[in-house]
Image 1 (cartoon, rainbow, N blue to C red):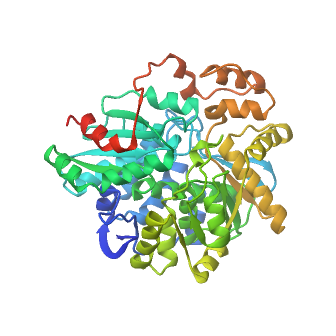
Image 2: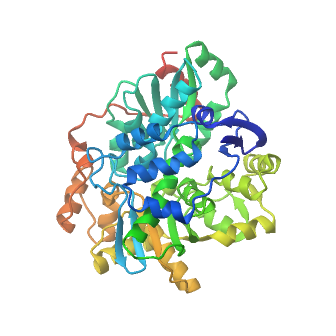
Image 3: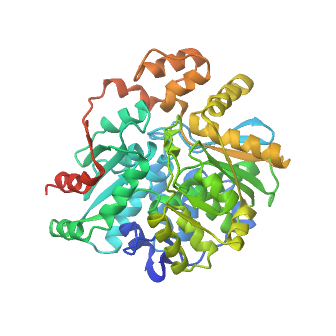
Length: 496
C-alpha cells in the first residue's frame, strides 16, 4: 500500500517512509492511496480475540510492509498488564442500555494517547530499518497536554531516538505539567513555550520546513520526525479501538452484526475522530460521528457551516487538551472528500495560513454532514456533566470526556436518535483534579498531588498507580522559551 501527500496526490511513498518522515516535504500529511475493506466475517473472527490481536490485525490492513508476526510483537509489548491496569486494555463502561464510555486511559500516562504512543516507537524504529536510514532521529512533539507525556514515555531511552516536547506554558493542567517535567530518560527534553497550543504547533511545523536547520541536523547525523497525529504511525493504531469497541458490543450481545452505532469523540486536533472516520471508511457500521468541542468551537462551526475560521478569541479552558484553533488532521478528511485533489487542499491550507480561514463548497459540506454531527460545551456545562454522571451513575469522568457526554446528550435531544452511542473517554479524571473537584462542589485549597488525594477521599475511587508517584519525582525541566527560539532549542538539545 502506498501513501499520498494531501497537498500533492502524485507524491507516493511506502508506509515505512511515511512513518519515518512524519510530514511530507510539501507540508502535507500522508494518507493511504486506497482503503482496505473489513467484512462482517472479519469482525466475527475478531470477537474472540484479545485487544492485542485486534490491534495487530487492524494495523496490518494498512501496513503491508510489516508482517503479522512483527505487528503482534509490537502490540503484545505495548498492551500488557505491566503497562495497563486493565486486561481489556480499552474496556467499555455502560451507564445505560444505549450509552457507553470507551475508556482509553488505562495505560502508563492515564490518557488515550498511550493507545498509539506505546506502539508507535516500534513502528518508527522498524520503519527506519526498512528504509535503511543510518541517521538518528529526533522526534518533535507539540502537545496540548496528553500527547507530550505519552510520547516521552513511549520513546524514553530508545537507542537512536531523541525526543523533545514543546507545550504551551500555562496551557496544561498542573498534573499534566508535573508528568512531563519529571520525565526520566537521557534522550528526552521538555520545553514550555510562551503562548497557546496553536503557537506551539505552528513553531514545530516551522522547524520541519526549515531547510537550513535540516542541513545542520543532517551534518550531525540527525533527521526530524513527529509523534503527533500528523504522523501516520501515530494515527493508524487509533483505528483499532473503534473496531475493538464494536466487537465487544457484539460479544456481549448488545448489538447485532451490521447494526450501526454512534461514537461521540471530544477532539481538538481532529485526530481521534479521524481515526473513527477511517474505521467507518473501511466498513465499521457507524451511524454518526459526533464531534465534541469545548469553548474553542472552531470544528463545530465548520461542520455546521463549511467555513473554517481561526480568527476568533482563543480560550483557555478546563479541558485544555482541546484548546486548539488549528485542527491539523482535518486536512486528511478534506483530501478524501475532494477526490484526492492535493491542489484543492493546498488552496485551503494556503488560505488558512494567509487569511486564517477557508470555506468548502456545498457538495463537500453535504458529505461531511452525512457522517459527522457536532456539538460544543461551555465551562459550566462541562462541570454539570461531570456532576450528573457521578450523581446519577456513580461514574467519575474527566473534563474532556464530559464535553463528549454533553455533546452526545444534546445530539440525542436535537435529533431524537437514540441509537446505541459510545462516548470516547480520553483521560483519567485524576489528571484534572481541580476542575473535577469544583464540578462536584468541593473547591480545593490544595495543589499538585494533594488534589488527587482530595478527589480520592471525596469519591472513594483509587488514584491511578502511574500518578501516585508524581509528588516524589524530581522536576528536571523548568522555565519557558519564546516560539522563535524553538529551533535553537532543538539544536542545543542535540549538541549544536
